[in-house]
Image (cartoon, rainbow, N blue to C red; front, side, top):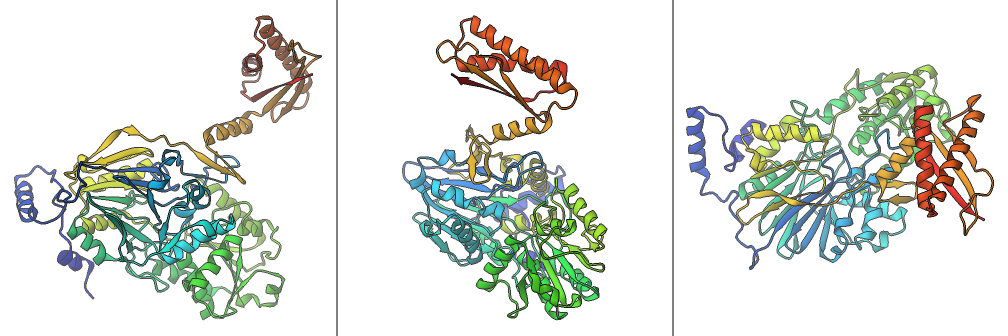
Length: 610
């Protein structure tokens, strides 16, 4: 079998001709000069040849995914055509109280909906497709393109809102170009933690842009998945890539990401050696991992029971499309009948690997699950790593499972999880294959993208070919293939999804909830005459989460007097506007609580006219 190193030597130039060698020795300078001489007449990175008459422009700007892991959405403008890559959601941080998730702010695209030629999806994870049901209607349902499994997940999101029949969903095949007038798109297979993942090459008159999506290079993928399309990526590099927009999630980690084959071996051993039931919790979207579990369960004559709605949905979609294979009757839903199966023949796959309170594993640990209770000798396997911020929640679930009598195995002690994102060597290999003129680190928090930028510098790229963008930054390319950040910046705000509603003023809502969670709330209810705004009696005071016990009566009395005085003084100054009266009361009470209790509660004055 040909080694990766030999394959690279035969198929990939060792350095992009656009890259300048920054080392100062005369020997290296001479080598760089010779290298440039060898490549300067090749077609790599030449200026565009088919720019429309009168000039044009190529601009890209992210609406999400450049300051966080999630909420991925990239906008590419080619003259009058607009393309979007991904419409993802972002799961909330710990301090985003009560928020379900956040979605990209597409306000900047209002009025441009008829220019959107297509939305291109890289893969089916929620941080890339999870906002479709909210944003497609606002974008007037432009055509959507993706691989078969990816679009199945998109369709499921739309069906839940009963709008799937309005969407234009087009399944694409790998390495088949889709033409959009003067532009075309090409999907190339990459390895990720979900099947059917793709890097997307957008060919424009100005040059080719390659969006890697989420990727890693796994040379021994499991469950029949194919390795990444090395040849296709290298062919792109030989033809010339203007810019790569590349995953940065694991840029801080050295080496290459671990193969799924290693995880499969650990799971195999644990399932083989378990004497009682096996309960495995993992992400419901890790279909390759789920296939491994199903294969091992089949080998050791265990029936597989599924606990968790998202797990059931994803497995059903994957089975219907042939991406998850299992004999008829092997996979079942949890229910009362599962107790009839001997423990030695039972395997349960559950949601809740991140410690979510309402997910299956947490309820099993608490003893509140309807159908599953821990038995002494059960082996519980957490085939995942805690996402940053979830460590305490996961530890709580693990402790509860131990108290119930389970044997718990985690990735801290065994090889039970691997990332779907490439580490430093994977990122290096991607850039060697593609040889882009410009590198744009994406998908990650600022420190991750900074590490990616350093990888580019280590390859010899100079800072004018490395572009660190934030959400809303606009990168413009000229006719010679040069790029610069525009002075214009797109306004990008937090758009939250909270239950069935959404709000563009997400920051204000989250700030309000933080105040209430830390300092409580005071409502002051005034009754006033409609015409004169004079008070009728004393205001009513209602407090929550602030004052209790022996101090409540005294403080309530003082709040009543201060609020009444502030209201009356404002009215005596001739200000009878409702907002002015509320501001006066707010200011007086803020000063009181700051001095009296060292607290800043949420203050809500209410004026009822009688």
